[in-house]
Length: 248
Ligand SMILES: Nc1ncnc2c1ncn2[C@@H]1O[C@H](COP(=O)(O)OP(=O)(O)OP(=O)(O)O)[C@@H](O)[C@H]1O
Ligand SMILES: [Mg+2]
Image 1 (cartoon, helix red, strand yellow):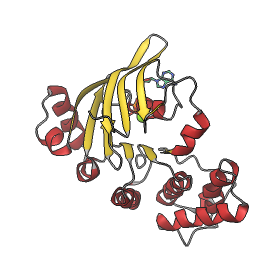
Image 2 (spheres, helix red, strand yellow):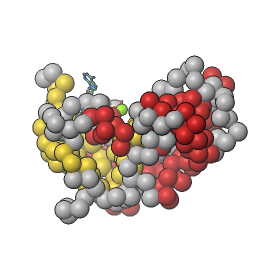
Image 3 (cartoon, rainbow, N blue to C red):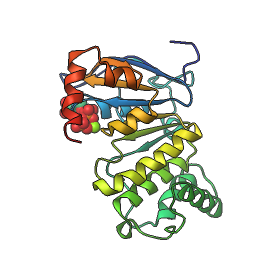
Image 4 (cartoon, rainbow, N blue to C red):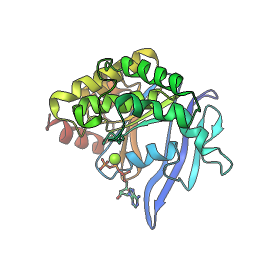
């Protein structure tokens, strides 16, 4: 751990009622790092992501983002959410807005850009995700893979310094997963800092600087992909990986 970690999560705990769903979770990221959270259903992966942008409130611990305490009661949550983009499993696009309309909404409403500036920015991000021919399409006219790429463009249009991805491909038909992973690959190459929940283990192996394995709210083990995937130290990690890769 160094003083200039870009994201430093320290002993974060969270309860829902009596249930402790995160138990002293710690990990760190440098700027430009890709960290992949893996673990069984219910292990706390989504909750951990949501604590980083304060969609969920951690009750204990510390989350320092670029030196600022995310968990501070004084934090400007709107500003935090401008700086931290999130991509969801279910796209969450507005059905009555076109691709450009969806991607321009944040820049227009939240950043206060003019309509033409917001549109320009939205178009640039849609181009970045390979959708320059779909600016004026509505979500219902797009495939799942295209919709998810609009979701990514919408997050990028805010020019975030950290991107959170919560199983961005798990709602997609298998043949559409690749185009979304390709866009994510591109972001990695551009140096985006990304915290990703995914079951796409070959993607994780290729892009992750660190894999964090969560089970039952605990970090069981973390390390570079080669170490975690090929030589897991904990039995639980090995069992989880066996289970998940046997489905591939
Ligand atoms: N809003 C909520 N209210 C109450 N309990 C919740 C809430 N959200 C999550 N939980 C509980 O917290 C635990 C962790 O859930 P979480 O969604 O973070 O797991 P996950 O690892 O993302 O699982 P999955 O792989 O199924 O998405 C689970 O026991 C879940 O039931
Ligand atoms: Mg989840």
